[in-house]
Length: 419
Image (cartoon, rainbow, N blue to C red):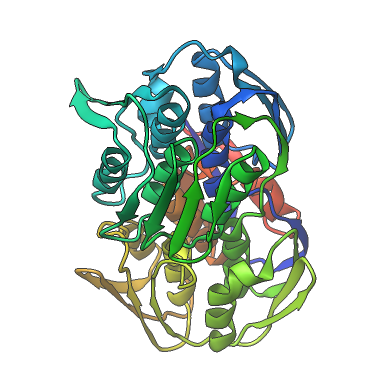
């Protein structure tokens, strides 16, 4: 096990390059196995443990997978197995995209129940509803999801709740279904659009992504292609929040500013200066920051994946702030860790009431999940003294080279073995 040692109290200055979007990459990689001919060459894949995990799973199914830094090449014509049952499958949530991908191409799949961060109940009932509407039989056998269909036939599907995972998973299966599928109350997140764009580059016919109605005309087969994943809005937002917390001025490159509008709006409201320049943004904080109220919502609202880093920032903002976590019911586990550092936060149900304090103090804390880990790194960066962040395997799931990127901005972070 490793830990991060952070010497806090240093402003952040300089330039940083944002990696490819984790949430897009972990769906695009499984989608690549739907190509029955040709090879997929996918660029801007982030070098994180989650993408490496997906690559090993795809290889275990019989595909040929090769990585060269941020480029992954997948030849799925050699796949000879539709049973995904490795430890990697059980380790990560996004492995459920294998269900839709395998069902679409082979009309059957067996995938172990997915794992991932413990941030509340995350059922796959909307996924199952969609697969069954397309004509598949779905059963749970010995801890695995088993799906099978003689044929998949397009239909109208209305999701009971807005679900990114269900939207993408059903879209994967429907891309190779017979006829037209309409997904209503669909998720609109940028990575949903990116997965659809990837499928369309492979030969799919998908329209309407980015709205709540997606129309899919099924095609007979998909082919390999060249594609580049969009920048990671959550990684970009994390560094925006970090400089707002620490002070300083950074240029964040390789971003799509429109994807960051909800984060930008809140930081500006707090007193942070932000300017856009093409595919980069400049974030500067010189004076004090003010408390604000934040409610997490599906895109284009404030993303739940940035609630925990934002809570850290608000812990040192002037006045009272209220955070309303409307997406996941167990996403305040980081609060107890922040309290160890002197934060004044009380949680009741889905609300966190934050009274800003002048500063935080270094302490030994743990990353309870991926985004909570980013929150604790930011807490360490603004704290007086030394902070140790343990359980950083969570952080490595979604943030490439986090200590190197922060150190290039003037931070002081080292990675050590945690004895």
